[in-house]
Image 1 (cartoon, each protein chain N blue to C red):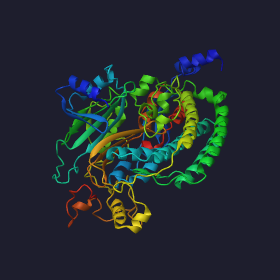
Image 2: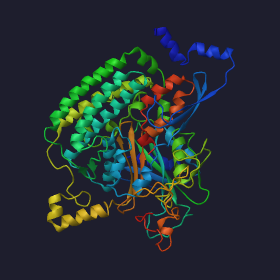
Image 3: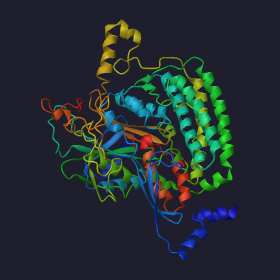
Image 4: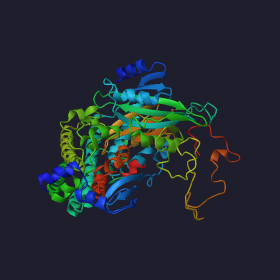
Length: 413
Length: 204
């Protein structure tokens, strides 16, 4: 496409001939159902689009097909029993949910996990962020017709999930953190494996980058489509890569540093146009930054305990459970009654794969959360989808839906 | 952390703030519902607050919170709607809380101030039944239109099933699918011979 054509397209997303065609012939609107399960989308959202020719006049989103009552279930579980549910919120970056949840509970209790555990959380969390972005970029490539990009992205993702399996015992349903620390220490020889994996992931990332970033078809379909201005994005509650693609510098890791993020040297990539292409570029760049964070954390990680030595919050070591009456009692009470989190309420937020992952928790001092609300970052972003696609071409819907990375698990709870 | 924001807010709306405080690094103010849209607009547009991001909007049902208090379904302060505002530029955060309850509880909408509130308010309506006056199209969002009741209320039974199509009478090993016993819609605490559900950790 020549520069002149590109400019024309930026001015009006609809091709000129489609508009003139509309003037000549009488048309009537057509309603098109996309989803809840459609080969060109992922996730379970039904998009009812009212079309005029190829232009989307009006859309209605129907969500909730994957609703399984996360909040109600959490309010009827002990604090530790909530963890497996959090894996299933954003299931492509489960460790970030695990970390976000236990950090909210720790904030309510007023404890901090040991330094080694904080480093392990950062390493595991950043690996999860990489799997999240690789999935998004790969799926975007696939749904725009580039199967190769998807395969490279998934190879890299599987390599990272192999390392996560070695650390946690599961690919996706990790449930790795506990209030006050993490479950397992790093296995022997794991850091070297991670370094080797990151090297291969970097090769694959560059491969995907080369395949897509200068690909004519990909650029034509993503550049200046699904545009949202910075002002509108904030108004709709965007956070994370989608907000940064609009040029707003907001990353919870930098704005309100938590864990040990203030000790690493990394940058927050920003876009300019707020279109699908920028959202894609921001994600690819964040893959590089996550890699930098993991390499620095592996260098800096200190020796020490991985969970707090306080039996009110964390399970005692097995030797104490079987060897002392205090240990057995603490274990029994934690399992049967749950952690007695002091009464109060807290809003805690961390940077999830798609943006600010917020937890609003109310405790009344019993062993169960009284109220558990998760602010899924994908929820406000999905609510802006009609704003981003109305008046545009139907073909622009697919890349837009891909680049916002809607994850049914977290959006529909 | 955001004491300044709270003070500015209180100075602007002295009569509407019922109480305020600061806990665990979060500042909050409990306010009267009538002028919530004006408050949201103030928080959003005041240059020294600049809270352009409505990061969260949710509600809490305080029916069981205090186990010693007798149950009162019509308590005018039963529900608390919580708004979390955040500023990107000044990094301040403020939470506003509104207590409502009773038969026809309504709060003015802020969907015209923050467009993100549109879906959040639909979610709170869906799960708690709090109505937002002036909302462009207040209808259920995660559950379906035929759904009866509001599932996150504390008096909504955990195991209640509301299938859109009749379920076959085949019992699963644990609890379903299938219609199950005839008193299946009655919460455990309200069946004959059981004690009333007044303790928050005893659930149906």
